[in-house]
Image (cartoon, rainbow, N blue to C red; front, side, top):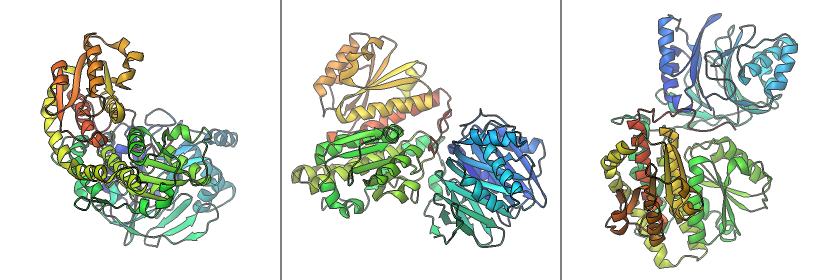
Length: 616
């Protein structure tokens, strides 16, 4: 995944591009670059490393930055190592065309062979440079306009892309196109803003268009948007949407890192996700996507949840919830496996896809596969207008707000909140949950924001534990029942941002292998709340202690038995087992953050990772 940005208008492009690249840096930070265009020429600068390194290079080399047309890019490497040559923008063989690209061109190698035979040379290892020179080849061989050459070229490739391309002899025009990778267009009077998501241009305009797959746009200075179908050049008439993003939500404020800010935002994001859906006093749950498809869920013989990463862990929790409360068999699939293994999907089968960004490539492909076989697809995502949101039959937004930190936190608890609502609503429809239990869980769900807020007060004690274990090489996370996926999520968070190896297991599975790793140097984080196999967990802890393992226990307030056995205790409020992951995950997020922070890691931008995986 990469971040692309562009500007065409009457302002100087450079400040807009640099500011935008900094806001897009969560999408990729291996390298970055910009190109600024002026009459019959351009300045180009790119470098390995962060956007701040690009700024230094531009300043030290005194590169010309005046010009009102420009494109920029921040890269997450797929083809070719992170270095100056592989950084974007790329330049065609003639030096006439300059392009930025997010995505993967799967048939680039075959195209490259053809171009090599026709005298083309390549400076980089990227698929982007191949696509760019294909466009140049088709343009010159057939004496076509740039827009027609782009359209024909894009019909020849296999893969995913969002691109922006400029001909240096026509700096008043930028051509953009999209298939499988997100691309947003901000529109003001006499100016256009291009970006992978709207965050970089909300300072300038709230009017946005989200390009759909298979669309391209010709942006001309001072003229109206020209939107067309890539397949047949059919003219389209876009719908302009009004953005509702709050600028304060994408600023760190008093926090050093976005991740910590987003952890602390969870009481509010959970409340926002519940707002309008849970009427606490009436014990009523309202979800349009369920209510308008009531019969489909009542008659569902099974449900398949499809997701990746943290969203997959949320899906595992959803499996427990839906089977327990709605009494429907559930399977949880990795999207990357589901889409390739010829899954058995019947017409009217229910598929739930979960994605924070709504652009996750494998999840989107799984969604399209399911729909092609006649399944009913329900989506849970955070980004309004995203590809998944546009392609599902029905769905629910999480309302977590922009999540900038690469390691997901608030989106996870927002996804669980939606899944709890779904399970309760469907369970009520199917009469698989009695009124007393339903009302009790609705009441407790309304208390979750307050309980999460209370849990966040343990941050100082978690910091002390983190100081003790900051230099260990391995962690083991254990949980049972609905808290087993929380253990998986806790381990993932630690791996992602601190680079400490960590594994999550069902506590009962420890003796089937992982117990061999236990010694005095192995910290074990175990979720030991009072509900759900508490006595069994006590037994697991005793097995670890017998082998000199170090126990960090997540327990309920008032706990005595586990607290006496553990080396370190983290106390969380008591809540029904079905809702406990919303509380037990908080200390695990804080533990991962504090260890990474103490180790001096870049918490928001961990190495090799990008926020949303929009390529396979």
